[in-house]
Image (cartoon, rainbow, N blue to C red; front, side):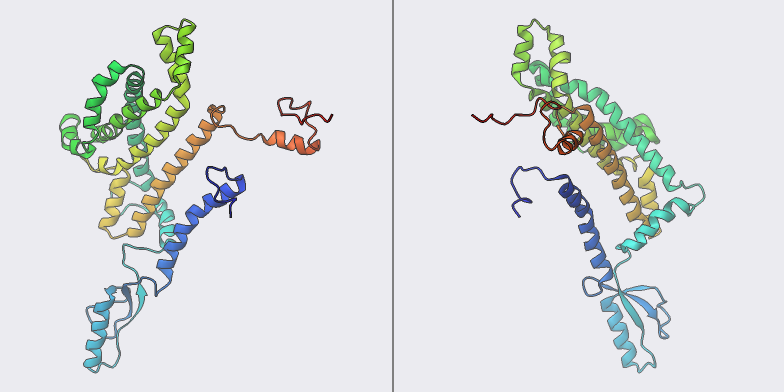
Length: 347
């Protein structure tokens, strides 16, 4: 047990993979239990036999209390047959297999109304919105944040206002953005920019301030000019952490997507979700939400993989080649790997 719960200890690759898979299997197992085990949570009854009751039909969902009252009423009226049904969940809680089927049919079934976009077209619109919004925000926010982290004057003249505005909810600017930029993609991009820019400035500035002052003093001793202190010392030293900051902030941009896409003309994945909810196709709603999570998670993992290799000195990883050669030569890797600590010689 101590191997699994040692404070600040690294897990083996096998355990990391196991726990990573388990992180997804546990919610799926809980979802399946509530979907398929009748006595856990099934507050509705799915009608299988109306038994002559004209206002109910097979497949209709009724609250359990209403169904019980209906059965008692029919029994009191000495009905020949009584309505029958099976335990069911509300329509807004579809089982995993229905959502899995919807993940396939959403890409293969034409939209309900002519002129509506397919799911992949809606996703592409949302990805474009995220891309341009986050690109514009980063192109301005990162340089401003670096300057605030480097110069106390820039920090004092910028951060108080930035800190003030970041508490204003980005959707509150929706009507203003529509009035300025129109009703199409531009105000949605603006909402993403507003939602991430002000946070970005503060996060980047704080990361730059964490650079060791010893590096700056050493550069000054060697005669570095002020602008070289930024581009040759502060930026390279904080670059790995800045990269991780942008990964996290990209996730924030995705959280603003839903509210951004209802500004002006509804579009993107938000329009698809709203349309499917209007038609009470909640399996498609869940499918669209899962797709957003998959895209975001895959993007983050790809960026993390790239960052580990781009900043290898910041994320040291054990060499598989070295381990293989060590086993091959029975641990006698003194000449192959001279940097390995050598055992003390016997007297």
